[in-house]
Length: 458
Image 1 (cartoon, rainbow, N blue to C red):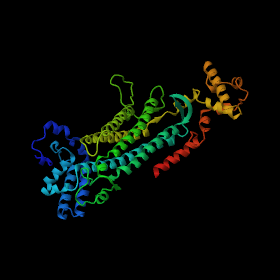
Image 2: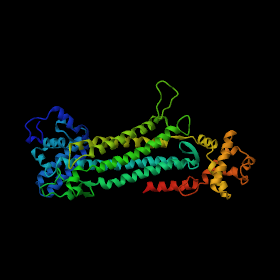
Image 3: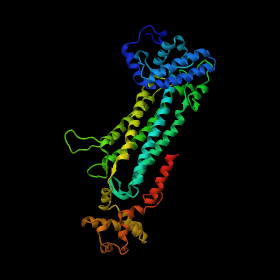
Image 4: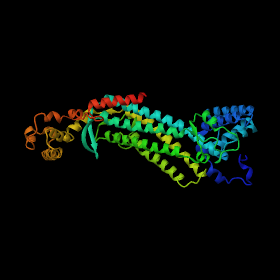
């Protein structure tokens, strides 16, 4: 089988070279995008009078037939034809004869592959945005039930202040909202058409790049042919956003692992998202959040890999750019799989309200409210802070919590304390008192929840 580009060569390609340089094993994922781009290209060739109308119809018919075979898994791809573009072109020529060879008029594999990846990433980005929405819906579903569920808020993984569990969950809603917005914004750069840039310098044929761009739903075309075939910024941007998104998934997964542990016992994950041990029959392992946490590294690696590939490349196209696809495909699949699992895992987890409340009742996380109480009585906050620090030390030394101390014990440290101090220290009142905008006060959490719901409805 002769190469479609073989006219200049006198020797066959070394088989090891053929296998090493071929990309068909992974870029066959671009088959439908490659056909979509080719259909737009041939329409443009006909519109510009570059090839006859009858040839256009024959090529379109052949491409449509191949697309159906691809969808029905009725095609086999050949390493000898190197990549998805040559494989599709070979199939087309076999399908309709030599006229299929006219399809490649006025284009190169360089602008062709760039077009394919723009189309692929546009589709996948939209799907990932929708998957993020499902995760946000799951978060809202849980948050609605737990506005007044109280758990310890942490800094340095030390109990800091009591907060609403809904407030904690909604922090992740907003992280995912920013991820979604970043992806939506990235579509502006993805939606550029490189088709018609040729190998690097454009073409001598009187093509209409705007025509093919419109056919493919692109918003604009690259104004520079060198940039069009060598640009992978849109993939880097996607991988960067994906890395931030996976970091957020990993942080939430880490909390699910901690919260479901025997030490915390704040939540229980549904059995369908856990596994057991082959030796310890009592074990219920949070394998899904652990794997979500672990898969973050491969997404980071894909970003660093492409950055490294691109950093020393001269313009325009180089074979190094073949390395841009596997990491992109892997990241898309990792993200999609992670989000598809995260949403139902959040939605089905059981929240152990009593354990959370017990935790905030047996710590000193209401100490800040004591300092605020004294500050409200006119004592400078820094002085109040020192007084409360001594009270906490006293309580620890006497194996008591702040609600266990008597009014007399409080008055030993400051005469400003009154009987109302015990109401101030109640966990529910501690949370409710933080009523500043964006705070954990219950009314503020309700406001935030409504805002989150409005965001999803837009």
